[in-house]
Image (cartoon, rainbow, N blue to C red; front, side, top):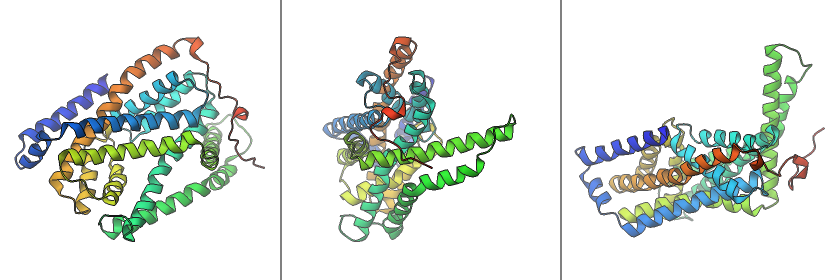
Length: 343
């Protein structure tokens, strides 16, 4: 509740600034005259994005998990992502705690958390690769500097390749750390680091296995999580004024979301500035972009917070009762997707 009050305070300050600062008359006019039907569409799109997150969460961590517990954990994670200044790490940390309290093994949680991060990030990087190349080659509508079209596509391609081949590298880096267990702090650090690298490598292998198996929940959920959020931003532009071309809208979103890494509650300030700045470089009217991004971000923060805060309260009550610890996803040998054997 403290974080919820903090983010509400930040939003209030932004609203006061928009209403009081000179030079923002056109932004205020566009926000005041926003189309209410498009505002409702933004809210629905954000609900769809939350549903996509919930689907990929369940499909990655535990396909047998009940939908009630799935909703409570995944929506509590989304609320944490909206309220905590952690670039998304706060939600993952909350999920780790909840799954551990629900009876899931530490190894299972570690591997699945890495896999979840990989599959949800994969949609973004593939989107940058496809839309960046598409815009650079003139296949997709939109105009932007080569740095943000071809440059971002090449960077995304390199990241995808590194991630795909990273398991072998992670295990190779971890092997030299193996050795006899000794009751010293340095030996403990080495073994913990080795176990962490091994878990990361296994998690990436698991993500690759889920993608190779064409898991509907993983693929459809990760795409929906991203696509509905992009649609919400597009509806934000429609509520304010003209919508940018598809390529510009999508690539600007994907690159601009890096502002969420700024350690501010919900990325407030960093994300808005990055999105508006990127769209300005894509020759989108700055006033329109500012009003559209602020409108979109209001719903992007508020919808998960409103849905997730009650879920977190219910989750704590459920996990306090032993008979709710009924996850069926351990041991790992029972899983559909097996990790490749290592010598």
